[in-house]
Image (cartoon, rainbow, N blue to C red; front, side, top):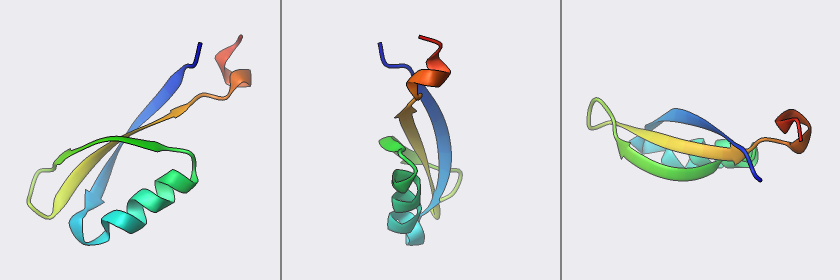
Length: 57
């Protein structure tokens, strides 16, 4: 069974693509984007599988 790790990432609206590309290059998959504390910010929820060696299986 796949186990996942998650992270929340602040995203500036004027740099959305660059920020998401950087996280994607590290293996993170975008799950959802929600509004942040002000109109200039978003919050991205990301996930990626935990490598098998770390899962203990």
